[in-house]
Length: 364
Ligand code: SR1
Image 1 (cartoon, rainbow, N blue to C red):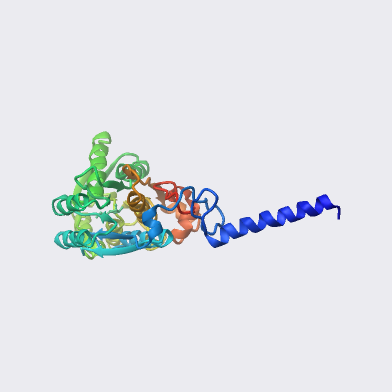
Image 2 (cartoon, rainbow, N blue to C red):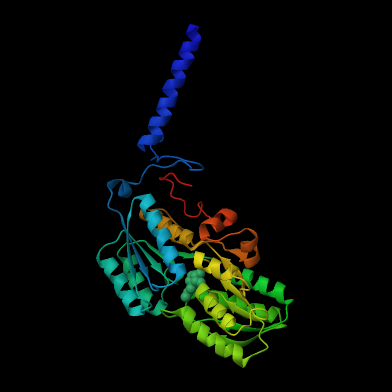
């Protein structure tokens, strides 16, 4: 081998060794930014680890109102995964649908000097006073699906007007703009109130579609309770052909009712949200639940944790909106989708890694 080739070979080996060492040790790179092992489409970190995170022991509290339900379990699973990825401790306290308990949990997180607090749902009257205390104590707050009552908290939602709009566009398409509908709604929950705004406008814009009954309850067994109400409403209004149920626990309850009454051919359900269990309900033979507008709930939990981490690092985080995607039962069947993992693969819009990206951690 000529001497010039030997020099090239030595240089290549040295460069390769440098790259491998930099990646595998997760150490600082040239720019001082943290790196973690990269695989596939992993993007490198682009900023130095902020002092608070370099010190370690960062604690983020999640204060949720609702404990039960597929949506909330997936959301919290995503939040936990993201916390692990960012190397922070996540303390989750749920209120079992009890406003006072949620407010107390929030007050406790303030007293315990959490580095940031994520408030997940809640009612303004009970939750805004402790949110104000958190802000006064200098604790960054991320408010998911709840009006925090202060611009100092970062608001996060799923673009609920779009959720309702997408689901209703399917209803309109399937019914040709002519239907008697049952509407499932509970006032006071911010996302449901926003979806309700879209429904009210939709009815004005589409006079052929009318609401003949309004039902709805949120409790520890929402689907079963909604099923009972839906059965009564369907019996009272035999001319109903559509149910607008923009929350998966509502849609599941409506599905139970339609199935029990044997109305699958006549009555179709337009919902919101998704889970693996929802996918099996939607794809079951003759399922009346034909469309849902949804985000990936676990992705929304991840976004919430990233937003909290950015706030701890002292970054400005404006209001965040995770966009939904319309999914029909037919698409699920055609693509043989049986779980949320496969759904995310088939609908890349459900992943939103650029929303509240944390620049000091390598990631997707
Ligand atoms: C009772 S509120 C339920 C909604 O909260 C989240 O926004 C989910 O999308 C769910 O539909």
